[in-house]
Structures are given as C-alpha cells and as structure tokens.
Length: 109
Image (cartoon, rainbow, N blue to C red; front, side, top):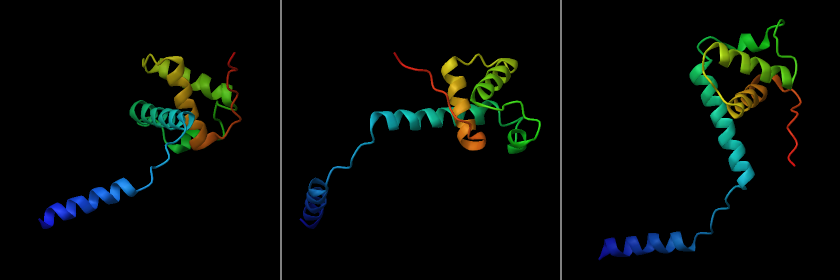
C-alpha cells in the first residue's frame, strides 16, 4: 500500500509539472550541425592537427571562403569523400572554435 501511494504521488507530481519548452526547429538543427561538424573533425582530422595549426601566422584560411576551401582540400587529400554539407559543417565548427570569420551563407530562394 505504501508503494502504491508513493508511485501515485510521483505520477501526480509529473502530471502537475509544467511542460518543458522545446527548442525551435532551427536551433535544434544548428545544434545537430555543430555536433556533426565537431564529430567529423575529431574523427578524421584531429590526429594530424592541433590548435597550433589553426593559429599559426602562415595559415592558409584567411576568410570564410578560404576556410571552406581548405576543409575541402584536406578532406580530398585524406580520401574522405565528404559532401558539400559535411564540408560546411566542419568549416562552421572550425570557424566557431578558432577563426571567427564573417560567414557568407548562400541565399535561399
């Protein structure tokens, strides 16, 4: 009997609890994209890179377009066969983590 009251009390508390607001779809997609970019980078690139590669004075990426070009170049050299979306996601991750370039997103029609 005591367990039944305890369970009933817990259920009542859960029912009375206000619903948690769900993040907007765009925010959710951005979070998944950021996680994917990080995962791709850490899985395929980090073994040859350290933060020093991204901060060195002679870095080849000088802007958003250049960063994407370098990600595309090196994934090709590694034979990863990433699609354009993967290249953008890894570029976004690197940009947030190291570079902070202004991002030129393609216009949607």
